[in-house]
Image 1 (spheres, helix red, strand yellow):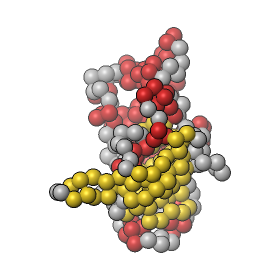
Image 2: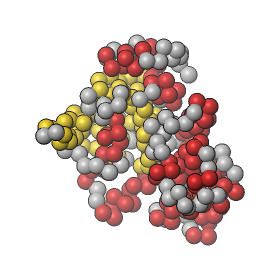
Image 3: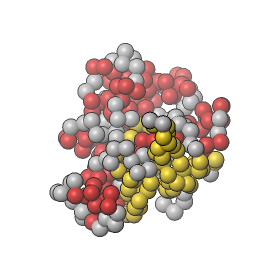
Image 4: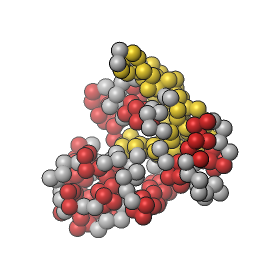
Length: 260
């Protein structure tokens, strides 16, 4: 993991609130290597989601740069951006809100295959079955309505949709926080297995250091819109250097600190 897949340099973003300017991001810099998971952890309001939305081009940055797969990511527009979106996909906290709840699972998975011309039309049914199998669901789920699925099943479909375009980077924003402990563990295992199989890099965003520690190679800690600490996951958990990281570790007193 020596190459750089994603490079964020001095990224800043502010919002107006009650007549004053609030810095949601303040000169944020980070890198992610191919096949690596960077855990981004911090308290609510620390800037994590703002960063993810800028990376997905859902928000504009005030300053700074983002390079993704060697390109100036923030300079892409129109058709060039639409083509490149396939390479960076997002898994949201609430998949039902990200889907048409009246749609079938097959329709949800067909959309990215069709929009990004991943496979020919006559191969899309088989590709949908393959995607479902990759996330631990049988092919007959394609005919089920999204609203009839459990939370864990919907999140598996969300992951299947995200990997349908064969991305090199997944951005997961609180993707397991709404799930119960047992389902959460299964989804985390699925993400680790997919990464091993396909070499996908992940930016795993959460307020829960225990969850981040379970899947991440490195951890970056955010506080007040800044990255205040970065290091190997085991090191950040075992010997946190910043006040923010120490507070997160203290909030999970039974956190296992031995390397995976």
